[in-house]
Image 1 (cartoon, rainbow, N blue to C red):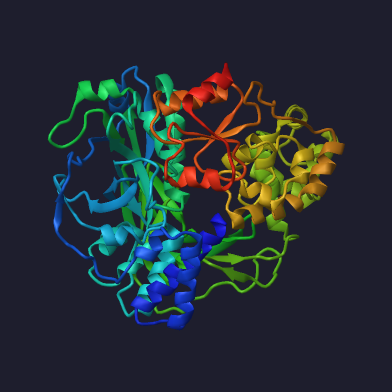
Image 2: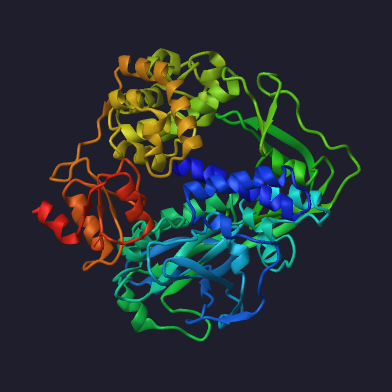
Length: 628
């Protein structure tokens, strides 16, 4: 029912937006029937409250607590000096617009921009269009602060819709957020924006934290989207997260311009305090960027393992940040089409933090004709378009297969098998699929250029070593659709902790796992089904996939949701639940075993849902008595 409601809300928002633009595609009667259906599913849905396209107010609203800026550094030594020996939380610094959301009695009441830090603009009617922003929270009164942004795929859809409306096309996701928030007409375009939360403030009786990480867990538990965040104890992993951020800047689906580090201890926040400009307990670590103009000599298309064609521009060489640059990533077909990119276009590129150079925009368009490939550059299959991608639909495409094998090698950890060496194996016919890696012998490896006996022995030892692998790593190495490591981890931790259980897993089962909606569940199951022949062959070749250990304790295999006012910190209760073998979730579904609430007569969404699904509701005291 949850997915049906969500699909209906999305459909109504789409029709509502077209209606307000003067381009209705269905009759008023058909639209009214959709609203009546939504009312029967959820009479309190926020979508039913959206009226008109003009904001009801443009007045400035005072912030209860100033929304300050951030201090920044580009130097590692300055970051280390600021951190000292303290634990810190890292957060990707989203390149968008900050906003504040006020909830009263659990309902979104006001949305406002940061403004000058003391007063912000009222954007309440605009944020109601943004799907990432919950219109109700399981907290009585609070303020959520975060960042509004526009990801790459949404930006392309937005650009097309603005052109259809006769509006000027936006030039980049970097500026469009502020542009939409400042509009007085067509505010339904705000539905293309996303939101990440990074701060929660409220009454200490309901929101009492000791650490910044407790806040993050609370935001996550309330179902709010949060950016990439990690807790670093004694500085562990800081260099690694900076490396990840550099890579994300070049290839990520939305813009970031650095990392924000925050001291984890909230007592230290109080001790350090603020300047008139910024809090002393936060520091933005940014990457120096240098941009230059160059011209496109050729656009080269390559095929990824999932069939997406990746465009790269071969450009007139320029020096950027101490390196000579001759290639620039263009991301995808949508980007190329949006900017009408072609040979001899003069473009601006940027290189930040010594990562892959990135296309910024067209400076001067050449008179040449815009062209995109019609056939796959590897197998010559006819290409298809899907959203912002050009797709090679041929699962037997040589380049797709090679990229799939390379992904497996990198994820499973066969370090000395480089892309170049795999290409040589592929060309010689030594490896045609993943199982062939485990059929290699020394004699075949010695036929490769620059591969002597010592290296061949080392490669074979690494391949043998990779035969013992944990289930999560193995699944992520298979290159499943929507099968990134963290998603595979959620599947395994949800109880599908063996190949036998995974074979029996259905789409309905997977939809009960956090982060899996109907579409992503369907894609994951379909992709996994296509891999069973390979999996069985790998097992026959001696792969030992370690089963994830079953949790032990009174709450073993139990999934629990915590809500409402508590006597202990939420994070402390979650730790105790995990210590006794249970897991926690942020939303109520039929996969939940218990709801923990000290107010069993609450009218909150979670309580109503639990009663509807006949899920037992335990008080905090009853939970701890059970754990005894």
